[in-house]
Image (tube, rainbow, N blue to C red):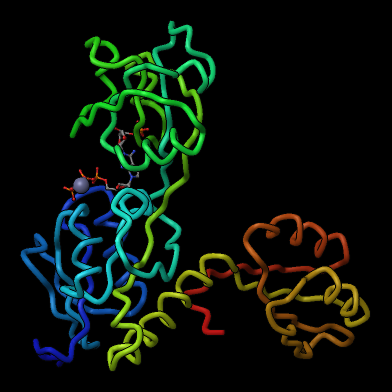
Length: 291
Ligand code: PRT
Ligand code: ZN
């Protein structure tokens, strides 16, 4: 069992919020074993020298920059806002949202140029400042810590800059989207010194696991039976991550083909394989791919 000591690497994750469940699931899918009941202060992994610290998401960039932790998992939005001196290592493919500018549906603000001189409420002052500066539009920013969506109705602001994912909160507050500032998802970020000192070996081991889980999400494993003469055709249809495995079947002139197919072309590839004469196609999820 791993021990609590200074040789462990430390990873900060959100204690309680939108990213917590998916982050813990991602870590467990990476083969890390730990207890997280009520995520007290930290967990010690049973099978890897890793401590997981549970903190407010806003504190993660600072902890990573200062080396209180070696790694952090946090929304890209928080990194864009806090701009820590730290290295982004991976995008983790969950926690998707966008930072947007929205205005009341009835508003006569129709383009970002119409925002000139207007008051804009946001919890993302730095991202907003950067955006308006880049676009040469001077606005009055009001920093609000929560419920930014209701500020136009309260007469506090004429527009807002806020996160959205489904868009339903905007719709409920009679707001319409004016433009998007950036897209965000959950990311893995590292302390710069931890990437050059003795901890790098452990970080690289974790990265292999994380990349394995991420790559597996993009592929499916497929087994099929086919007449031997269509094999060249099958190889053309399946742009393989690796060369397909081919084995003879008891039925004369027939083979079994096993391969992987990329998620984004999956169904069109399956259709082409069927048209080419493949039969009995079996599709399996992949747990990890180590390249
Ligand atoms: O307590 P702590 O400080 O750790 O958490 P928090 O309350 O600051 O953050 P939390 O848990 O709300 O969000 C954590 C992270 O989730 C954010 O930093 C983003 O990276 C990500 N994320 C993904 C979102 C959303 N989707 C999202 N929809 N963060 C916030 N929202 C808000 C949105 O602004 C709106 O108010 O959720 C509401 C519902 O959104 P719609 O568009 O689905 O209606
Ligand atoms: Zn927060």
